[in-house]
Image 1 (tube, rainbow, N blue to C red):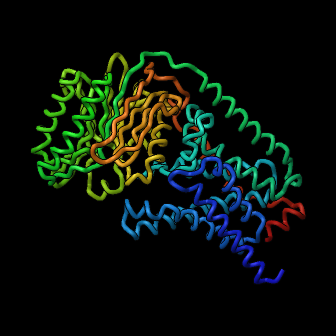
Image 2 (cartoon, rainbow, N blue to C red; image 1 turned 180 degrees about the vertical axis):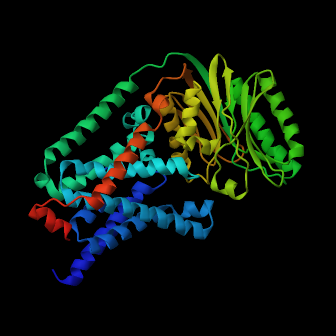
Image 3 (tube, rainbow, N blue to C red; image 1 turned 30 degrees about the horizontal axis):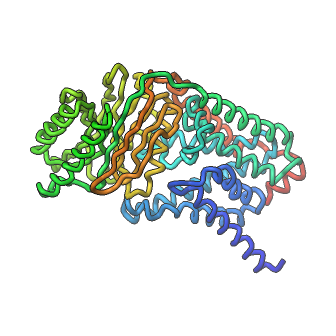
Length: 488
């Protein structure tokens, strides 16, 4: 083939791989493609000489990572957008070529575990250290694949991510080496066995009944914002919309009603008046009522969830722990308490939106025996609604509790401890959207993850460190085939 045509073929392969990666890295990914598509850049890295493989993989991952450009632009300045896409692309390139170095050098059955171990290690470190945690982890792409999600009850996000990256790793190695892989049958059999065992466990867990009292939840959202400088007429119109929806849900039998995050951002002088208003609303309708409110004092704003009893008492005030990028720019204060309260004989926990993106945070409520989490939220212009809702559902599977989430510009969602979506509708502007959801509330389901946390993730960090050391210090296999590939 002429050199020009060969280059065009490689270019087309890189672009096609990048186009497919967009379906993997999108905010609402195609879950089954996540099991296949990442094999392509890894296979390119293995089969092509390093100089060619680097630009092909780099082009592919940049095309893939840029799929969320519009979303990033919504939540951060333009320079930060390019930085985030560049860092995300660099991380993919690093993971692929770190795995490639070991796979090509040793060509043995165990090398299929290098790529997933590296991915889980990076994901675990990100979850522990970054202000946005492991947001966008490939594990969350499986949000609608319930049998696979049950692995989270054992090993958390790390367990799901390991499995979802092991399969493409094995596919890439199998296509590259086939029967010539050292004891390759072990690699292929182990991958099949782990996948089968995970599915068997998942289906078995989903068959377990939930025994408890049925509770009727109301979820309310109006997308129209109320800022601290909003006119009295404008704010009153939206507030009346919330009142009408709450009263309607109470008339239909709602026992607990959840309103969204920062349904209003108030000046401190107004906060007490609004607190009295919702106290009266809860008392008049004889319901438990959770309300998301922001208070802006001009220096260090705060983000609260108020929980009112059916008698109108303020039972709990919870302050958000983890801030979204716009809130960090506005210097919002962060809370530190984990608020639980007994509602109808069961322990309920309070959280706000981004808090539930952090597995360690969700586990703290599991350790406090929460049976239900009430979560006001505010997503970004409907773009990330599915991802944020499913990320939150992960916390319920990890720790065995139900979740009721009310989002502005997102989804109103109720889920059970197995991650089943019991009811879900998108939010809307005035007159708003209300959802009635019946949830069987039992005591929290005990899970291994609540007991041990991200132990599997940190073991993967240790394994990844060992693999990286192997990639730099141990000698290559002496077979001619290994030398030939390593020299490419």
